[in-house]
Image 1 (cartoon, rainbow, N blue to C red):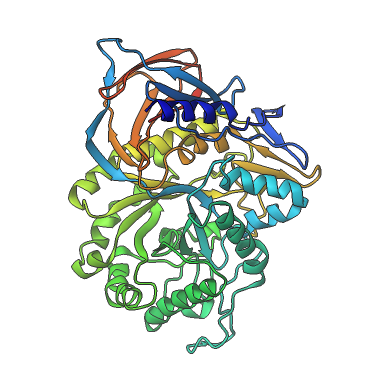
Image 2 (cartoon, rainbow, N blue to C red):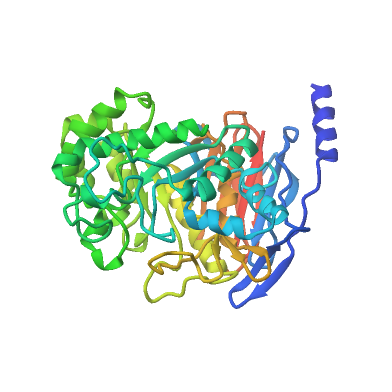
Length: 503
């Protein structure tokens, strides 16, 4: 035991030191600036002896993953909130973002060294350690054009002309492979399609109010299999597949976003007769099939979707996007979980600047970072197994997007200066993604305190993680008791994201 304590003390003393944030203030507070010669990093997570815990703090005042080793107290506040490791909830799959064309385009803008800093910021052990990412099947609204992998002028039902596009080879595959290398192959992916080839749709267009022609229901699934075959040939395997990005978009055709429309009581027949049987009998039978992939406010449609017992038997989870979440509480997830406890929830898209009256990029906005942090913890408190952001990098106007659907991103690339900016949203995600590793399990932490949200997790390596978000404009003290370790009494700085880890 003494040898272990001495070894841990040595590791803590010799751990490499993080590079500090190079702060720059814009109209909406501050960002951390990265260029070819400088980029802030995070102290690596190193086990500390029992009796100690490590806290990491990011706040409005400018701290970014500020690390502090503190001691458990043997006595504490009698009203301390108690962690109960025996009461468990969902098992975590991961956190991450999407490999959109816009992400790759903005990666490509940077010189090699700066680009390396950006990718390492997301995927390395000195960065956020993303573990789950979304890969579009073809183009999205954050491409420079609308495209699929079978854009022929006639119905190519043999799919003889199916091809990955230049965007896959320039903007997606190289960076996916680099991310895999940085995570030692641990990074997982799920795929989502925006649109089918125009000739497969009832309106003969990739956007608009069209749905899938019934004669192509099976072909659309075969198209997915072709995609998985093509990416497998490039060394990329997948964990999951959603049933399609935001099918509701077809009913809001004025957005101009490429889509395939579905009504849930029709889509469940496609799942039962085509998607489920084909995937489960293919080389990709392991894929998690994830339904909905749309807004939380539309979750009542899930009842229609799961009313078909065969479709329900094929589906593993329910994907939600965060848009308009301020109109519906995360408790909707728990209500549905109670009815379908074998179906997991996962957040598969989020961004700020998405509303027509809002400007796209708010450089340095703490408020947007706080909204991310709060949304993530609320999802985790209500059975979500992961939280995946939208674009990982956009330019200073929030693009490119071929339909000018500019939004914000945790990282903004400045093409004029060749540098990039880490926004508070970046750090908000990191307070979860870096610490709550795959196969962590949420444990019970009853906690009610004004404008402070908490969640606790037991990691598979024996560590416990507590995340605490303080939305107050003033300091707030939290008191937590772990029956196995003692008391944590910590003052949270105003407007702060906090993560505590101990073994």
